[in-house]
Image (cartoon, rainbow, N blue to C red):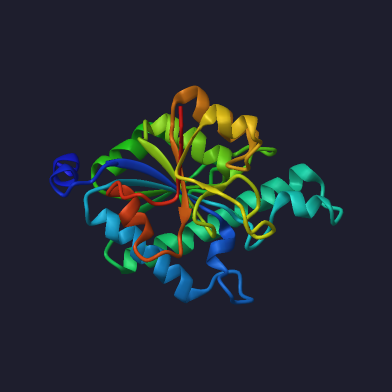
Length: 245
C-alpha cells in the first residue's frame, strides 16, 4: 500500500535511513535543542512521510555530549560513548514528540534497553512499523562503545534493506577539498566508493563506509537547510553528492 502510493507520486526511494547529526538541532541557539530548528526538521520528515516513504531516522548526540570530546576532558572513552548514546535517546524523544504533534505516528527503538521510554530494537518489529507507515527512530547507537552514529545508520540501513542513506549535513555535498578553506574546491555530483576512499574524502567514518561498501548501500550527502531538501532528494532531484559503487 505504502509502496504503491509512493510510486504513484514519482518517489525514487521508497525506504530510506535519514542520518542527522545532533548538532543540527542546536541551530544558532545556545540550547542543545532549538525548538524552531526541531520543528523545521520534523516538517521536512512529515513531507516525505506524506508521500508514502518508509523512514528510519538515526540522529547523533553531539549537541549534548560526544564520547570523543569527553575523552579529552578526562572521561573514560567507554563511559563517554555510553553518555553519547544516552544523548541520542534524548534527541530521538524530542523528534518523536514533535512528529507526533504533527500527526506522524512514530516509534523510538533503543539499542540499550530502557522500556519506559523506548521499544527495544527488534528488526522485524522495526520493518513492520515502517510497512505500516510509522517513522522509526533508532536511538542509542549500536548499543556498543567505539561505534559512531554513522556506523549505526550504515548498520540499520543494511538490516532494513533501505535503498539509500540520506546524510543531511550543513554542506551541499562532497568536495575534493574543504570549501571553507579553498575557493577553488570542486563539488562532486556523484562519486564511487573506491574514489572516495582513494581521495580520503570525509564521507563517513571508516567502519560505516565499509559497511555501505560491502552491502551496496548508496549514500546521499546534502544540505539539510536547502528548501524542501529531503523531499527533493527522495523524488530523485539532483541534490548533493551521491556515493555508490
